[in-house]
Length: 273
Image 1 (cartoon, rainbow, N blue to C red):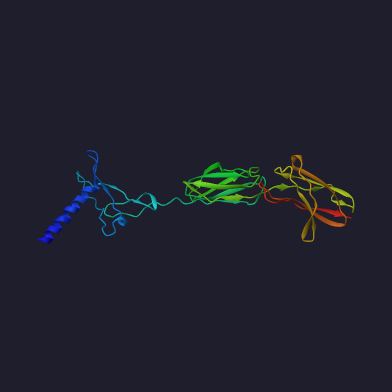
Image 2: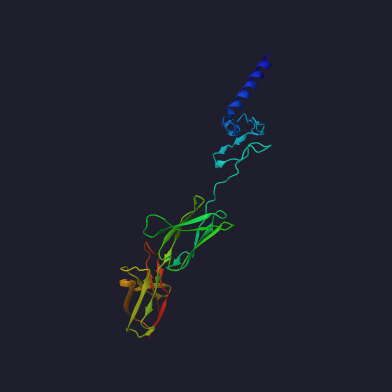
């Protein structure tokens, strides 16, 4: 007798629970069944398939569970199955790299990386001296997820930072280092000891007002022989007399600043007799 009473009570509770799970809808609409989540009721896992029939004898429309690790809904309650694990995944974080780095001022730069197959990719840039990033360009990844931005000659003149955004995810930030173009010329390729030669050139982009270092090679080291200041047009000029005979290698150095990294000219050789 006692067992019959307990069984009747459990049966009534089960019916009531199913009635609570059925969500009322407009006339003619199929009832909805809330799909249970196992972690919420560790000792009871109510089945969600097969679904109880609706008034018209057809299966009820399921309401899928959500998963805290996945922003979208699970595809639960398929025919003949039980609640399924999430079928979605978090969008992949895009990657980014630039080449060459460092580059020479005005040199073509290629920015590339990976994102989702066919996904839109937006490039953002922050120039030296700026406080925020600005959107530069948008492209699409190919079927393998690869994307490329090609920055034409004359575009990248100073140091800058880059990142890309794709499917709401942002890549890491890469720093593009840029060397200034430093030119050096001598008024004579050969001279006599004590005779003056003029060393001149220019720096691109403009660094007007800054000093450059004219250096002469001494074995494996370099010795500064002049420190001219860049004038209008970012040009410089210095007069020098060599005290010893021999072939002297010369170069000019622009020390690094907030706009360009340390930059060096090609060497020029002057023969002193």
